[in-house]
Image (cartoon, helix red, strand yellow):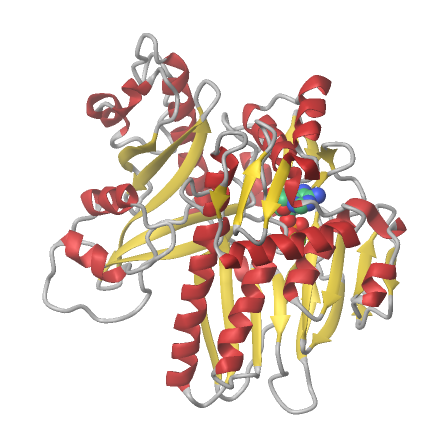
Length: 526
Ligand code: AMP
Ligand code: MG
């Protein structure tokens, strides 16, 4: 799942509301607030508690950077291109902002260093904490005395290695990576939090699809940061308690699926499979096996435009962007070889799988959110709440409309740079709409942009279209097939869609909008 480095910021999920019982210790307070929460590693909780001992909540926030903000940052950042999303935690006490926390990755010599930057409300460094250090050398950056040098720095501090920040002999690469990472985060925080135009991701964000503003009597709304993005629920009901019960169960279910499928979490089932020795069987839960079976089927049905085995190639390009160095042809060929379907063996009867190739990696990023949406819908269905619309980072799943005879009005974003209005609008009902687009999580090396979606036929970033939206009955299908369609473009054969009662809308590079199988709705015209 996920977006740029920021979006792995799946910290302890605190509650955004609720009054406090008499002053618990910070640790108790954290534990009480995050039962079964997403990504709540003990290191993250401990670091938050150390930096903000008085906080009574840690509220997740995701902000989308505007094109203007990104342009402002262009050239100023040392360790990355300007991100599209800024995902962080606000530490609060009785609603008053105490500071912010961001989790980020930088590449040391060759492996990512995961660290957390803790900021005051004015965006001065309170602390830098190293959460996971993976290299065999250079671990001295974990020392308190080295990290303490950052305290008090802000966006106006040059943070030059060797003058502002001491380098440690033998650990220069790690020192540089972390110094540059902190510097960049300070610049981004400064650009965002001093700017009036910062907008929440769910109205202006990276998502290619958005739901328009809605006012309905009895409209209940909740949201939570999951799978590296925002999951927003809108349900029309007068029964708030029932809505809350369904939302709690739904969020918990999605968190559970994330803990099985996320490749950003080292302890997920998929990460364990990806890290296991060649030939070693790994047991898998039935939820994972079911999704893998769907993914295999949809991969076949989409002429492998969608291929969950593409992990090695996906990883290669993600790393290339972090290092700002395009991979060589030999590296691409090696990743492509490791991305073949035969690189894994699945034993569905025995509930297990193994890797047959040392670099093979499964990536469920193109289907996991869809499957999670379907699971979420089942929680609402079971509680007879059907007037529902869910928005998971831009993929939508609608059950019944907000009122009889009407669907939910939604829009598809125009992904082209500088676009000021939506591309398309339609009403959504008993269907899911997924859009894979070039604007969301792509990277850039030397100013040359590339997509985060890989063409499994070449091992290189896909170049099929600006965006492809698929409307299907299930969110799992819509998710996988929109990724496939983005790879294959409008030339892809539409028989698969017809068979599944699905349809698609493609925005071609020349600006043409192609609709297939009666994709509903209308173009938004100036
Ligand atoms: P989506 O936004 O649903 O199109 O999913 C894109 C994500 O899926 C990427 O960030 C990768 O993690 C992964 N991915 C990239 N290319 C492919 C592909 N061709 N097939 C399956 N997964 C892919
Ligand atoms: Mg997808």
